[in-house]
Image (cartoon, rainbow over all chains, first blue to last red):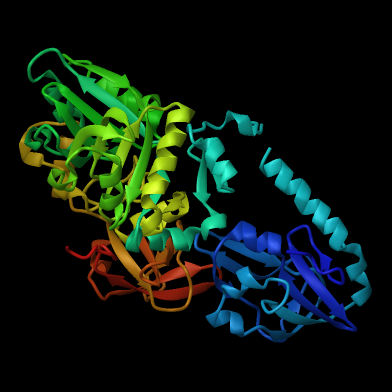
Amino acid sequence: MAYPSNYRYTKEHEWIDVQGNTGTIGITDYAQHELGDVVFVELPKIGTKLTAGKPLGTVESVKAVSEIYSPANGEVTAINDALGDSPEKINTDPHGAAWLVKVKLANPAEISSLMDAAAYQKYVEAKDKKAHA
Amino acid sequence: MTLPETELRKTALNSLHRRMGAKMVDFGGWDMPVEYPATGGLITEHMAVRTGVGVFDVSHMGDITIDSTEPGGALAAVQHISMNDAAKLAIGQAHYSALLYPQGTFVDDVIVHHMGDENYLLVINAGTREKDFGWVRDNVKGFKCVAKDVGDNYTQLAIQGPRAVEVMEKLTDANLSVVKNYWFTHGTVCGLPNILIARTGYTGEDGFEIYVPPDAKTSEMVWARVFEAGKEFGILPCGLGARNTLRLESKMALYGHEISDTINVWEACLDRYAKMEKGDFVGRASLEHAKASGIKRVLVGLEMVDRGIARDGYKVFNTKDHAIGYVTSGSPAPFLKKNIALAYVPPEHSEIGSTVLIEVRTQKLKAQVVPTPFYKRPKK
């Protein structure tokens, strides 16, 4: 699955799509593949203040619980309720329909410190190489 | 220090698993497949075993033989080191048992196979192989027998599910209709002579475990033939992830979770396999004492009432918010489509229908004590 070129990416495998002051956050295809079948998602309430690098929620596969870290500072303005009943969407459409939260960004410019698609692609390829050495 | 990955032990099928794109994990020092994403992954594998057939590479399991040249020597040793009554085993029969410390806690759980007059085979866990063998060797010293670690002598495949028997029938000349649950036979399998075929497993389904020569070429040949034979039944390769969820639905113990060196037989509710009347065995005196002084905690089955998943190690509370125990294994149950767990709690909280709370991160979520096993296979 290709990584959208207009998104930015974290080392912990979250993506953020910034439009004006609003950021949409999700987890990457690499992350969903590493997790396996996603069965449960826990998201913050609307109004929650998020801090870059701090947990914003959890995603659970059959095997394990993983924390999702916020790629940016801001306040939650929307959550993807559909994931409550269909968490498996994270496996099938991680970069689209399975977005997690929308955030009003404190400082949209800080996103530029995150990886772009090409850098993230390189980053996960290096990880894969290491894992399968 | 970090050990390089090459230090992990590998089964003969390791490179095949990797070629199939399996996700690999370190399991008790072994590099093992946890799931095969390319053929659907954990949930699909679990469902295949419940409704069709799946195959597990379980070559990491350990094997110990106990042989004697003296009549009764091997049986006496097995009776001394394991809690079930091996005198009841006919040749060709196996049973679930456990090796205990003098304290009545678990060295490991085992399947004891009665191979011949003076021959027994113990199949043990992967993560405890060295510890188990050392313990067996030390504890049979007073007996006229020889204990051997033969764990590297086999590639062990578990073919599990309601269609497993049809797959096996295509691959062997042995008459499987006379091999009942927990019995075994020997026969030609995939052209290989005298292969041990046991009707055992760790999934709660009908199925077989076969023990074939451990070289990569033979192992891969057998694996390929099994998949060819199972194609019409939708056979799938299955990893340790599905193995865990299948055994949990069936309430089968996992060493380090439901049983350990600090948990005794009564607590683990495995006393039906401890034959106190058979005579002395290691751990028996402590078990008698433990029963007389009262059982402080017992293993119960829990089903989540609130939305959330209990995980291994999570704390259990009573409804008055006092900590009362902990979860030994917790997971979504793919076939039952519920979130289930096993936990140790005091006996007063073990009644079916009791409500307890499980601490899941920052919340305490309701769960209910339910009958176990959570899943029981339909009678044919």
